[in-house]
Image 1: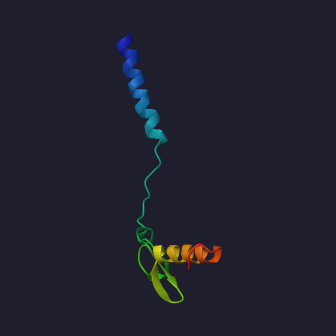
Image 2: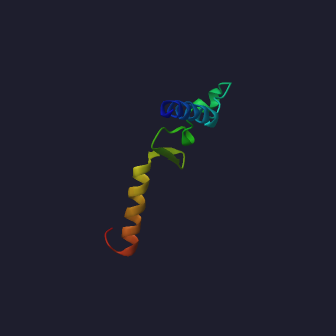
Image 3: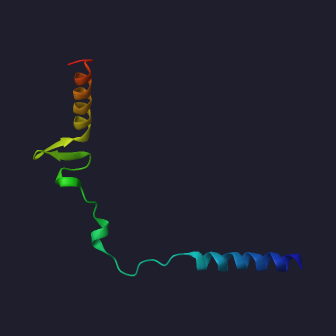
Length: 74
């Protein structure tokens, strides 16, 4: 009797999980497979005044301007 209940519970767990799955898309959409890069500069870069620069350069420049404005270093 216990074996029958265990088998029924095991089968029920598969039936419930199969209904909870989302269906896979039927059509492939090639546009979703392409990663869009900002302003065609590449990964980790951005365009400022028509020139591609690294985002770290932008961050370092912003920090330097902030330090100079507060009188720390120039």
